[in-house]
Image (cartoon, rainbow, N blue to C red):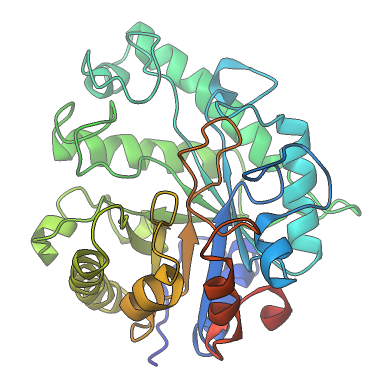
Length: 346
C-alpha cells in the first residue's frame, strides 16, 4: 500500500495536520470501517447513550463516525434527522476521546425556496455568489453558525477536536441545489472555496476537507475533477456509491470508481476514501464480505462510511444490526485483519 503526502495551507502544528498524519499512518494498516449517526439511534432504538448497532453486532465501535449538520443553518436545536446538536457535540467528543475519527456532512436548506437540500430549484448558488442578494447575506449567517459549531468541538480540557468536514457532496448529481443541474462547475467551485475561506478566516484549524462526487459507472478522471475547487481546499477525495441493486453491479462500479479516485488522489497528494456507501436494508446476508469488502479491499483508501440505520425510516438502513440477516457476515468482516475498527486504531 502506498502512502501519500499532502500539501496543506495551514500550519503544520494544527489539529488538522495531526489528524492527517494519523490517517496516513492508519492507511498503511488497513481500511477503517465507519457508520453514520452510529451513537444516536439504530434499527430498533433511539437516543440511548452508550449504544451502537455496530458495537452490538461485533463488540466494538466503528473506527469512523459520521455526523450531520443539516438544519444548523436555521439555528435549530436538532438536525434534519432529529439529532440534538448538544448531543452531537457530546458524541463527537466521546468518539475522539475513545480514539476514533469523526466526519461531518452538511445538507443545508435551499436558501432561495426555503425547502430542504433536495430541492434543486431556484439556482441559489449563483445568487449566493452575487453581493447584495438575500441569499448572499443569509449564507454568511449560515456559515457563521457552522463555524461556531465547529469551534465548539473541544475536549473536556478545552482542546480543539479535529474532524473531517465534507460540504457540498454529490455535486455531480442533480438532486441537490448545489448539484450539476443547478449551477455551473465554476459556480460550484466558488461556493466550495468561499465556504472553506470563511471557516479559515474564523480561525478554524481543526478541519480536513473532503471532496466527494456521486459515483458514476462510467467515471473518468476528467469527470471526477469537473467540480474540483483546487488542491488548497481539499485534503481527502472520495465517492458516494451505493449497492442498492445487484452485488455484482456494485462491485464492478465501485472498483472502477476507486481506480479513478485512487489514481487522481495519488496525483494530487490527497487521501482516498469511500465517503458514503451501503446496501439499503442489506438483503444479501453476505453483502459486507462478498460485496463491500470484495469491492474495496485492494485499494489504498483510508476508510469507508456506511450510511445510517434510520430510526424514523424502517426501510432506510445501511449498517449492521443484531436482528439483521447480515449480522453474522459483519462479524466475519470485523475479523478481517485489514478491516479496522476502534480497537484497531487506538
